[in-house]
Image (cartoon, rainbow, N blue to C red; front, side, top):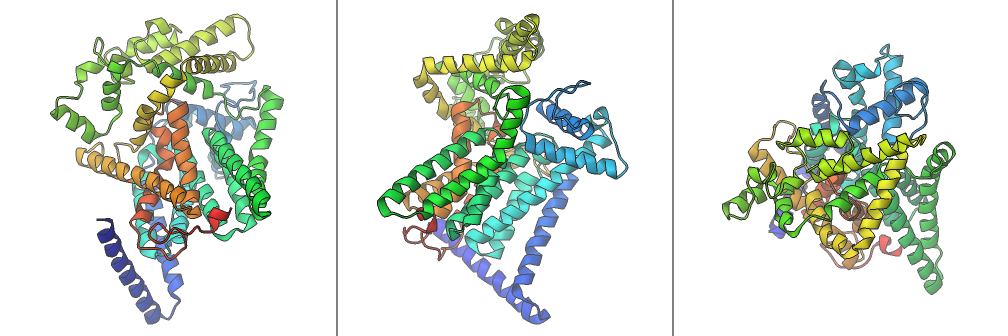
Length: 534
């Protein structure tokens, strides 16, 4: 099947290139200019489609915190979550997305608009502030096209990849019509992977430095990447030191050092700022809550696991398991049902759970989700009663420490539960697409595409390892590292894995592409490319 698809793509791509050449001769211009024009128009079309999805809908939950941080930074020059003066410094969220949003708010002010925070929450102001997402979408689409061009060299595949990534990610309301930061993380992930691919294919030092800088900016967009990038850079440094001692070659060591230099140059200023103003070098303060959510869910009973597989699974799994009599019923997730604790939202006990969580009474909460918030609030109330200056930060630290103790008390259980959370993260594609509002046909199609794309990413990573293909490893290391990190260290709600969607789609396009003439290609011999010598 793969060979048939590859042959079909080859013929289509060759015909498309022949058509471009004929148009080049007809109009007396270079074929390269026509290719750039076609790809450019494709990017603009996807960007325009994304712009149509930005509405006046209000921001909610974590997006409101991002909005508050950006507004305070633009209006008062302080990265703060405070609602009124004094505006004390905060590291409640990562800085890069909110710096860009704050810059966008400054531009709106220069254009004669100066909306208040409340005006930005919903209505015309909300639509205006979410316009900042178009900067990110444009950068993401450009990176997608460049990556596909570098790895395939075929303009038809570049167009196909750009359309797929645009339609299934950069124009999806969940990403472009909110102030969550999965959109921004995906863009930084694309550019980091692009520079890393260029670095391993050319061995030029400037690309390693650029990749390291993007690693740092990526970490300041989603803090989980701080640990992923450190592991990657650390592994490359160790390999380079071993290689230098064995073969007396200094080039790999210099490349790894440049990666580290770029990474450090990006993250160090923010860490110093946090140490000076907050007394901590942590990039952001919410890691404790996320780890605690995972620690609690490690206590899920064996009887509850089938319910979690069903509740977190795709549409075709849910329908298929019901037909076989193995699935769950809606009543199982309501009060008194066998899977009630798994139900995050939409239960008949949702309001009671919320009230108990807000009051800091974890013993009265049913769902795993609300139990986390209830415990954090309980600790906040205790710290506030003790006169602690920043009760929120202390509570976050306490739940993080509690989570570590819970996990380390039974590491085997933690590892055993990790595949379940990887399963949850696999289905990160939103049910509502550009033209479809939870259509059953669309949901089925995107779930199947998600499965194929996820599989393609894993296959490409394994091919990179087995065949020592540096380009494939450079493309897949960061997204695979992110998926594993979220599966291991968090409760992995679907949007956590969403930044990998563009690279998953690119991996699928690359696997279905015609045989490459690059050394170490997945379709050719297993000789290592430049990346293997990094």
